[in-house]
Image (tube, rainbow, N blue to C red; front, side, top):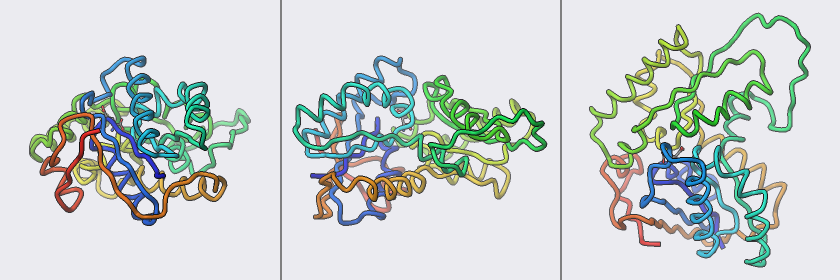
Amino acid sequence: MAIGVFDSGVGGLTVHRELTQRFPDRNFIYLADQANAPYGGRNGEDIVNLTQAGCERLFEAGASLIILACNTASAIALRRLQQTWVPAARARHGRPLNVLGIIVPTIEAATGLPWTYEAERLGEKIEAIDVTGVFCTAATAMSRVYEIEIDKRREDLAVFSEPCPGLAGLIELGAPAEELKVVVNDHVDALRRRIGRQPDKAILGCTHYEIVADMFAAALPPGTPLIHQPTAVADALERYFARHPDYDLGQAGRREFLTTGKPGAQSGLVARFWGAPLTFNPT
Ligand code: DGL
């Protein structure tokens, strides 16, 4: 058995890499739904159906716990799947199974508060507002998940999401650095103009963007803190494992990389990020 990591494409590798470093003995199966990437411009129903199909494939391949290493799938599909489909899959496969997302850990990291915390609204005037910018896909921005969930917990944090349509697709295709830098700079600039000043902090709210995190860091004012999802997810998973020792996640350190798209070597951009060439096998 194994931990499954799912994304529309190569973005989830950023989370996968951190998880394999944190839990080296566990077995991991990575599934990229590259036949249907990118997800960010799709409608909600499509995102739910594709995420469900990917999770089913991972359960069949031996995953017991799946991490949706995709903000778009976590924001749009996760709750729907957890309500009825996951319990039915558990009964069908006859073993403990679950699907977890990456937005809860990111909100915990962004607010410094546990997910279960609910702010008491005292109606007092807030003196200082800290602005967090979220770079994400169009679907994630439209869900307003970061605005809603952060606002529930921290009145002193204002959130502005900047949809970056096209960026995940370019990263998926392994576009040249010069082209990616122009797109990243344009979005950082657009967010600054919309807020009226630079953000105090930024969340890379699409796992693909972590591959070009250095470009975001260079485009933002020097020293702007970036909330990195891979670390936030690994920290949250460590806490989750302590509470739920019931999943069989394997112990052989096995690594499998599957794609619904064209199998074979991934782009030079991915190889540079990964530190070595990486080959995906067919599902
Ligand atoms: N990497 C995914 C995310 O975090 C999906 C990007 C896409 O497929 O548009 O949102």
